[in-house]
Image (cartoon, rainbow, N blue to C red):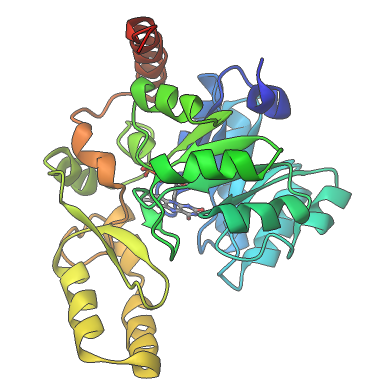
Length: 316
Ligand SMILES: Cc1cc2nc3c(=O)[nH]c(=O)nc-3n(C[C@H](O)[C@H](O)[C@H](O)COP(=O)(O)O)c2cc1C
């Protein structure tokens, strides 16, 4: 047992990150069944849809799983209440202040883990009384920190800054990555992109197939002036770039919001329009060449963790 496995009462300190339109009840349950911790990505879901996914996961596993609530959406409070009513006790919050719901959730007996991207913000999370922190480096898929700190630089700094359990995220897709994160001071890992490319994820097959041919430079961070997000480059990301090049300041924010408010994330990731939809994915995607089941991914991670640990030079 380590700090992360005992906190969640799971077998391996491997968490499947919440992923809007990609991590529904089926994926979360499969990860929990395989000994990790699955998270349903509430994203911008209406509470009814979130309820559907929670009930689905509860029907598929009796093991612990949680929900990820990005606090930037106005539905966050309703999503939280919906999850509490259904008995959810593990909340990963992101994209907002850790102070907002932590005390409320802890009073209800829930665990609260907040996602952060710098040592300074990690200290604020600890002060807000969260149970653990996810420190997510700039390599990660989806929304990114403004400070652009990469995982290798981030994890040791956060380790030195906080005492509570530390979960590393960003660019980790196999056992080597898990080993490296732990060597840097993490107690566990959160992986998104690797679990996106599994049979159980709800990402559209067009999106998955496209990612199998990703190159090392296929992703880029867009919207740095507003809400930075790492995307696979396509027509949609080019449109975002054109807006960023054309408009300044307040007008830019307006134009970007206007462009995003067209259900582009759902269009790309769930419905499979890989040209015109928003495709969130991490920089390490080009290391992944298969779409296995979650159980196979977990086996692979555990085997490559052990192999690589045994191969480490014992002396410098
Ligand atoms: C398709 C996709 C959607 C994501 N959506 C969310 C989200 O809704 N909320 C959140 O906190 N993080 C989100 N993330 C970030 C993941 O939870 C995770 O921290 C990240 O993927 C880790 O980096 P990796 O992709 O290199 O494994 C998303 C990531 C991806 C790839």
